Image (cartoon, rainbow, N blue to C red; front, side, top):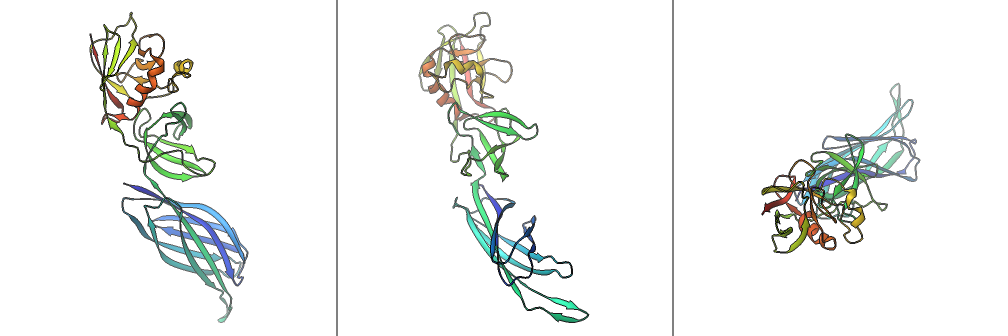
Length: 324
């Protein structure tokens, strides 16, 4: 399974001799570059927590090289130290992993050929790596929806449970991901991390094969592939035509389901029938053109059968056959 390595500069410790406190740190890892200018006094440790970059791998371990250069900036003299070191991250470990480097800077002073300076400063650089599964899913909590920000429009939208996404990076306490299916497919979105810094997204979800369902116009019943039958209603002035229709991944929370949430917590989740128009499969008391399951108390059973199911078209959970 593909993993994403999120690498950041965690902290800088300054020990040894004091050679000044105007410090620049430059870090390069696989063409990712971070520069930090910071006032740091000898004998102190400074928290930085700045992202270096994200890296993807499908290997059990992530190995690469880091180059770290540290400058003590001075009006007359710039003291410089650098090091190249290996990074090795175990991608099976989900807890933060740290890599520590020590960079020495020897003070040098030279004027008109005269050289002096015996001080040596030691900078301990701590990099921190977090490993996350690249492919994750929207959690199924509460009413079955998670509010996120769509990045190109900066609008707030709701995504349905178990929607597949690809994690891109974490920045400013927000997790960014590409939506891989449904109404916002291929859009970059983000959500704020939980208060403890954990992700809202979940892993290790297995989508199920597409659901096959049948609606009988004459009997007013919806039958799922497992043989369970549910009472349903259609609209007498707009009867269904016999045939096959795709059942879509839910698009947005429908306010028409709010009144039924006490009996069916997922009542705001509607499944569009076909890939256009306003015909949906949902629960309620009457139909205004949709296919309405009138046994509201049983709606969550239908929801459970549909929400994880998928056709291989990135848009649908199954197929509805309408018969006499």
